[in-house]
Structure formats: structure tokens, C-alpha cells
Amino acid sequence: MKSVGTPQGTDCSCPDAFQWDRREDCEVRQILDRIADKWSLLIIALLDDGSMRFTELKRMIDGVSQRMLTVTLRQLERDGLVRRTVHPVVPPRVDYELTDLGRTLHETVQSLVRWTEEHQDDIAAARQRFDSAN
Amino acid sequence: MKSVGTPQGTDCSCPDAFQWDRREDCEVRQILDRIADKWSLLIIALLDDGSMRFTELKRMIDGVSQRMLTVTLRQLERDGLVRRTVHPVVPPRVDYELTDLGRTLHETVQSLVRWTEEHQDDIAAARQRFDSAN
DNA sequence: CCGTATCCTTTCGGATACTG
DNA sequence: CAGTATCCGAAAGGATACGG
Image 1 (spheres, rainbow over the protein chains, first blue to last red):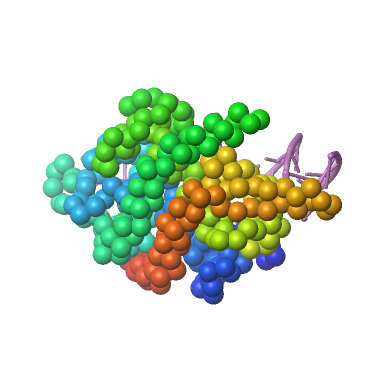
Image 2: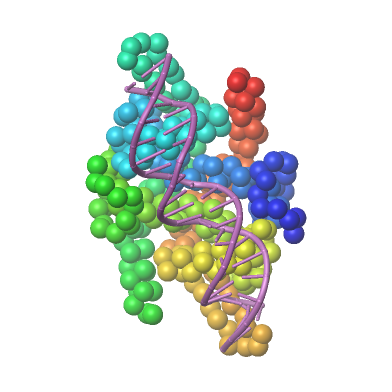
């Protein structure tokens, strides 16, 4: 073992599909953590073809705090998945949309969301079985 | 807004693709949080056709603590995604494998992992651009 | 070998108040 | 409107010790 937790530096490029998690600072794991994050998934799934304003996103993702929405959008922008456009008007208007890179991820995220929607009953049933078995 | 954080009960079934995040206790969001979790994704991606022992998983997912591996595997078992088989031998031997339900998720998770592998360079580049632009 | 229990640190993220 | 800054409680998760 390498010692510290997950320093998130030191690119490793993760050789093969069954080994990519051998090193703690694995780039792929770091990125997975980022995009498979609670709010990121919702934003990417929500942002389809069009663009959305900050407040619009906030309204759609019910319960997200202003802070977390800002933080998450910044990370997505930094990762090149979301483009942020500031319109110099008063009151300020900021639009968010997926970049080309972001759109390639959108498909995958959608299929994850769809899977969840389609199987939520199976999961609920499994949980009941598990819980009553104890 | 409904008040408290994310109580995770009260099924809502999330009407349509652009509204599923309107309610905080949305079942789909709760499940997404569960499976798109740091360790769960790695386990589901790792568990393909065969079964794996606890220690084997622990070795593959470098840096995971015994506690988190146990906790995560229990959740996956509870959700009906992973089957746990205890062999009554000494020393104990426990095998983990995907259930049928788990296998349907495996595909989706793999495509997410694959996306990450394929685009890690794009992301690294985007981050550099973003960071040097400040 | 495969856990569970406990403790304790670190991180996450909400609430709130304030700005251009 | 769209943020930023600060504070602080809650939860995640590692380290360690112990048990069947």
C-alpha cells in the first residue's frame, strides 16, 4: 500500500480494466469521484441541448443550496464539461450549457438515470426482503 | 421548498425526466446517491461474470478500508445488486457476485468508467486551461 | 479470513450575511 | 440575479482493537 489517502495528483493512467484501482492516486478514480458526485450527475442529466440559467437550475434541482450549486458548476466548468456564459446586463444573467465533451458524457449519465428509474421498484423490493430477513 | 435535507423516505416516483429532482426525498435521487457512490461504482465495475472473495476485492480496490468495503458490500447486498455467499469453512470464505439485477447495472457503470478512461486527457487539459486562466 | 465496534479526524455541505 | 465568505454541525470514513 502507498500510505496516504487520495492525494489526487500523480497521473497513473490505470493500465487495464481490472487494475485501474491499484493505485490510490489513480486519475480515473479521481475523475469518477468528481463526475459521479451527487449534484454533478443531476446537473449533467438536466443540461441537455439547451442552456439554463443559474436560478433555473436551482429551481429544478430542488434542495440544492446556492453554495453547492455554484461549487459544483465551477468544478464542471473547470473539467471542461460545462460552459459558463456571463451576459453583461443588469440584473446579471449567466447561462450554463454542456460543452461537446460534456455532451458525450450526457448520454452515459442519462443511461444511469434511466436505469435507476426503471429499477427503483426492484431495489425497493430487495431492500424490504433484506430488512425483514433480519 | 420542503424544509429538511434529504430524509430518503416517502417514495415519489419522479414523474418526468425534467422534473425528477423537484422533490428532495425523490427515490431516484436517493438510489443514484447510493450506487454512484465512490466505492460502489468500483465494486460493480470490478464484479463482472465471476465471483470475488472479500480479500480479493480489498486488494483490487487499493486504499479501501476494511470498514468501508464491508459497509458498501452490505448496502449493495441490501439493494439486491450483489449476492453474498458464506462458505462454512475455516478459515471463513465469503464470495461476492453480481445478481441478475446487478448485471444489468454493470453495463451502465462500465460505460461510465470507459468514458472516464477515454476522456481523462481531455479533462486534464481542460483543468490546466481553466487554472492558468486565473 | 471476514468481519464488528469504537473512536476520532476530516470533509461535506447547509445557513446566513454580504457584494457587484 | 448570481454569486462570495464565514461559520459550524453532521456525516463520511480511516485507524485500531477485538471476535467467531
